[in-house]
Image (cartoon, rainbow, N blue to C red; front, side, top):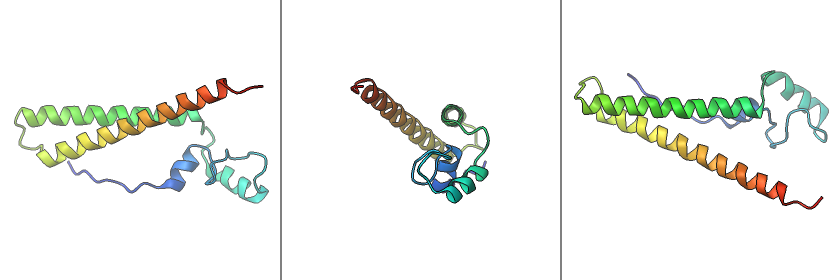
Length: 119
């Protein structure tokens, strides 16, 4: 199996999350009309925070399952699984999990700040 790490494309990740590059939601008030309209057509129609989070968590889970399977195969002595491949897979799973925990912590912090706001 050939593992290749893909470079992170910030613009694509922002568009998939339904945001403009400045972090504002696509189509929000205060943005320029032409730029907002151009961004809206390039985003997926079903882009929502929930779907983005579900997809991200599913990818983290898949990476962890793949790493676990590779570790088990390596321990059983499967000659088609290398140590390098196993370690890269485990590191990708660890990084994904760490990122998911960071997002969760930031969401909890933001929720707490909103709940403590004076109205």
